[in-house]
Image (tube, rainbow, N blue to C red; front, side):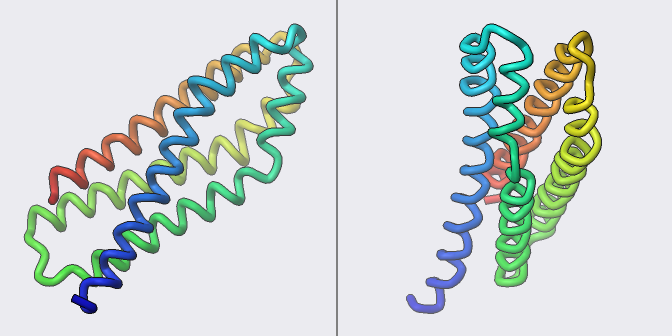
Length: 152
């Protein structure tokens, strides 16, 4: 029984951290962003609010992504005699995490500064791009969850 404690704790940490990231993205995209846009009458006020909320979030998200990846890697190493199908599934999940990380990095270090410097006429375009990125990240995360269930 004690031999299963560490893998169980790792799996729990892995699932909870991935679920937290997934839930935060769902909340931001479907609740926080639309409601705050309705609340603020002026686009400048909404952009100021979005900037305030996002401040220093990239490092927290990256830490979470690293935690998800690390726990996943440790689970892989701890898996006794994985099947070829399981290895393929986990390789796909790892690839999806890399894609999500790259998309998040591009958004954080390229698109976000562009949005901050955008003229008022360009703001809607950037808001739409961020919505698309949000949908993409949510989809990637949902596919990774599906693959996990499939591999089980």
